[in-house]
Amino acid sequence: MSNDDLWRRGPMGMDPTLDDFRLPSSDRCWWCGDVATTEEHRIKHSTLRRVAQSEEGKVHPGNVFKKSSDFEGALHSIKKGAQVRWRKNLCANCNNARSQPFDLAYDLFEAYLVDHMDDMMRWKSLDWPAVYGSDWEEKARDLARYFAKQVGCMLATQRLPVPQELVAFLNGAERCPST
Image (cartoon, one colour):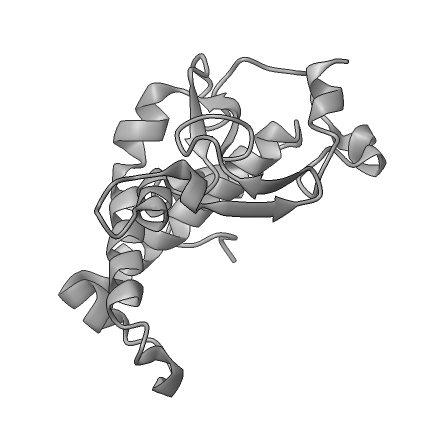
């Protein structure tokens, strides 16, 4: 069974109806074109650690339960494996240094939501300056870029083209799409 056959299973599997759009397999970073050396977490590793943490403060992957069409049960690892990571499709620089502001924006957003989870039902909208402070507009864009990076990794894992407007947004464009 080929690697592509393995990725055809589950909700994130390769749907054969998209085969006409697929690109050849590549070992290149979809963002910059360098050699892809890293796998991005599908769910941020810090989030998985928080969810997997026991009352005693120890991290146990078995505390995280996943249910999908290709897996049901407690995770064996929150660090590696197809259940928690995309395929290797980013270089280390893009996955770490270039996207660090996006990851930090996500961390702040998640911490704010966790800290205010009991109050959120009463909110009519999210107060972005309360989440990010005076530079909330740029940090909110960085949060959107975090999710754009996830979309890019998903598309690259599926061997589907990553839109150039998404790459431009990661590179600093104000919005995606640009119009």
